Amino acid sequence: MVRKYNISQKVRVKTNNGGHRPPPNDVKGSLGTIAEQSTSNWLENCEAVPPESPPSYYVDFEEGHTELVGEEWLEAV
Image 1 (cartoon, rainbow, N blue to C red):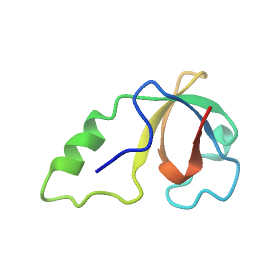
Image 2 (cartoon, rainbow, N blue to C red; image 1 turned 90 degrees about the vertical axis):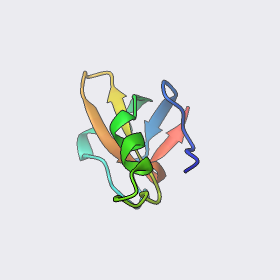
Image 3 (cartoon, helix red, strand yellow; image 1 turned 180 degrees about the vertical axis):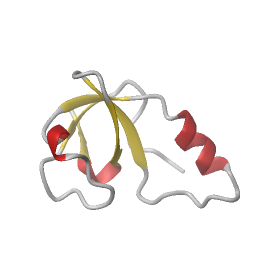
Image 4 (cartoon, one colour; image 1 turned 30 degrees about the vertical axis):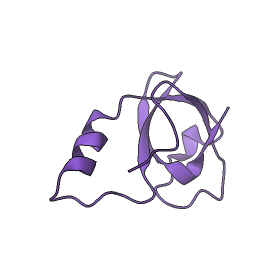
């Protein structure tokens, strides 16, 4: 599966109109960095689990926590 964002890329979480897998309200509008996706990559390559579409990303936030956010909720900065 082709991913739109790369590890360590800076992103902003949209505040609305994102669609699939919405983020918690406290991170909407926040800046973050795409985190390592090792679990997600493993699951996408596993025949038992179909790839998620659109994909989701683990995003690290400056507040020190990581959230799983759907691709449609992210925009590059």
